[in-house]
Structure formats: C-alpha cells, structure tokens
Length: 281
Ligand SMILES: Nc1ncnc2c1ncn2[C@@H]1O[C@H](COP(=O)(O)OP(=O)(O)O)[C@@H](O)[C@H]1O
Ligand SMILES: [Mg+2]
Image (cartoon, rainbow, N blue to C red; front, side, top):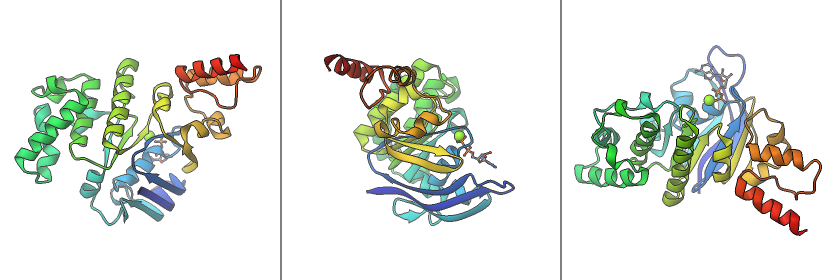
C-alpha cells in the first residue's frame, strides 16, 4: 500500500529564490526502513516537513504539485491529524519532551486524542517494553541522558501508533555506541510493527546496513531511490559529498585494483562475505 506520494512537488520558502524541493516525485510503501541521504541543504528536512503538513501549512512559501499521505493531500488534514499518521522525531528531543515525568510524557499525546484511560495504560506498557525504558517511568525528562531522552521521544510517538515514523538526524547529539543502540532498536520496532521508518542520518556506517531502501537528494531533487544495495552501487552515491561507510570506501579503493565482484559492501559482515566469495573464485 502506498503511504506517501509526492507528485511534481515544488516548494520555495518565502524570501528564498531557490526551491528547497524541486519537482519531487516519490512513492513510499508500507513496511520499509528508508534512509534519506544527501548533502547539507539538499532538502531532506524540507521533505520531512511535508509529511506532517508543516510544509505548506506552517512554513509560509510557494508550492506547486501535491503530497499525499495515507491517500489524502497533506493540505486536507490538520497538522495535528497528520502527526498521528506520520510522526516526526527531531534531532534534539529535549524540545519535544514537556511533561513532569516519562509516564505522563507518553500519556500526553494519547490523552489529547481522547483515548480512554485503560487503553492508555495498555499502550504505555507496550511501548515501554519495546523501547526498554521501564526503569525511567518516574523520572523527569530533563534528568535523562540524551540517549534516554531519544528513547522516550520515540516511545511517546510509538504510543500514537503512526503508520510512518520519521526521524530527522535522531542521533546527531549521541555518542556512537548510543547511536547504534537507538538505530538497531528502531529497526527492530519497524520490523515488529510493520511500519515505515524514514530516517535522515549521517551515521551511514550504522544505518546503511539496516536500510531496505535509500533515497538520495541533491539540490531539492530526489536523484535516486531504490533498494539500498542497488543505490550504493550507482554513480550518485559515489559522487555525492556524503559520509559513506568506511568499509564501503575501503572496498571501493580496493576494487580499482582487485576483482572483488560487482557489489560494494556497506557493513563488515557483507565485506567478509565478499572476500570469501572472491577467494573461492
Ligand atoms: N525555515 C526555513 N526558512 C527558509 N529557508 C529554509 C528553511 N529551512 C530550510 N531552508 C532552506 O531550504 C534548503 C533546504 O534545506 P533543508 O531542507 O534544511 O536541507 P537538509 O535537511 O538536507 O540540510 C536550504 O537552502 C535551506 O537554507
Ligand atoms: Mg536537515
């Protein structure tokens, strides 16, 4: 089922001459883990803002074309309605957490939607288990570490059971170990809930091996979109100024002098597999 459809969508922020989104055409299906990559300023955050209607409803600007979310134009929903279908976690969760303690934080969105109390309790139990934050329920959000806050932000949003979970550089403020934990947790949740996760993330070493699909953006355009293993072997991925996985870059250099097969690896296990196959030939 198609969850998101951009059709010839252009968007320019008021006061800017350049289009932040420039003829975007994109279809996103259910049950995918999608990495959104591109240089700074290529339009990733702007594309994400379309998913919960902030563009064009909140940011003043000019637009053409359409964005459909869950079968309806993003201008036909209110931002509040859309945010229960496509929920966004931002880079800095501190700004998103407002309640006195973690339990209230998770309950907040559900209460606003008028969900009855016994159901709220059940939903909280579910997401607390999924995100492994049971020990944090009585703590105030500001007492938590960055990684714990990020988990709470994800739990609060998962409680709303969105079809699409969107994360805009969610691990930018975390150290690599914590970033890895959060990203692996997200993949686990995505698979379990069969939801679609769209994530803009610079830590390609960690996130690329988890991704089903890869969207590449440049100057407001989607220049490539497809299965991650295909896109990383195309020219665009090699030439964009992005943070390619170290293992990928090593093998790209090696492949200039050695016969290593057609597909470059994005993870250590994939690299080992490739080396074994090359040795057998
Ligand atoms: N709130 C805003 N107001 C005006 N221009 C913006 C705003 N947000 C982003 N832009 C501009 O839109 C373009 C795309 O930016 P953005 O979507 O943030 O890219 P990315 O997330 O890939 O770094 C840039 O030229 C940026 O300066
Ligand atoms: Mg951005």
